[in-house]
Image (cartoon, rainbow, N blue to C red; front, side, top):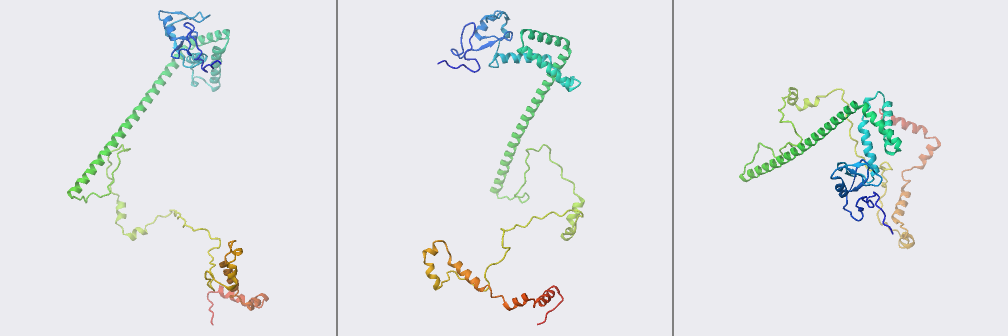
Length: 358
């Protein structure tokens, strides 16, 4: 079974002179000449063209080649290498900028013309290629001054860009060096401060003038020197001389009151804080009754999770639920006889100046 070829075409590439292949000799280096874009190995190129110009060894190619024109391929496909070289040559001649045209449409038409010319040079027939070469030469001869001026402007822009990048790299390197120096100086300062504190402790000297919580400013990130102390503010001195009561009375009109943080709320209570604890009786846990004992020991009642304490609580609740209700009063209010009395009670509740006597 035949071995598949390399996708880039290097594996089956063969030198037309020595017939060497990259499959048999992996270290072989192939070069080509932009005059015809025919490749050969480096040894054969040195042997044939070191003495002077010579004809291309490829069959049917009659172009004369020189050794200085050979170079290694950047792309795996020589057709791509040829197209890149052609487009680079066209871009060197047609180097006009958008600022050189009056309207954007004129600039777009110019770009379309350049693209059509490059396409004819790359993929056109021999006749189309000759016409494109003549058009390229005529444009170069007609706009030679503009081409040179644009090339000079491009070189100046590239030089400025290189200088700017170099300055940015130097500034970044200088910042790193300064940061390292500041870090080392801070480290030495901490060591000296620590040694001084240990020496004072060993000698039994206490420095009352310097507080224990000494604030040290970092030098890192500070480019300015030590600032002079600010002059005393007369208004601030006057406020400092006031008493606490006078300071509290000071206020500024027109200031909005700052919203206060809401008080923390507890969990949501669906009953609104209603207390369900019984007030007329007290239920003891484990209440026993002779009628309940036989069911308390029966598995059929206990297995389902039934609680006899809940049964006792409900029974007592239903028994004591009507203790605060008087049936006769309810009947009078329901028949309408007590409506006047109820109205008087409501009016008395609304009148704060009225006093009831027993």
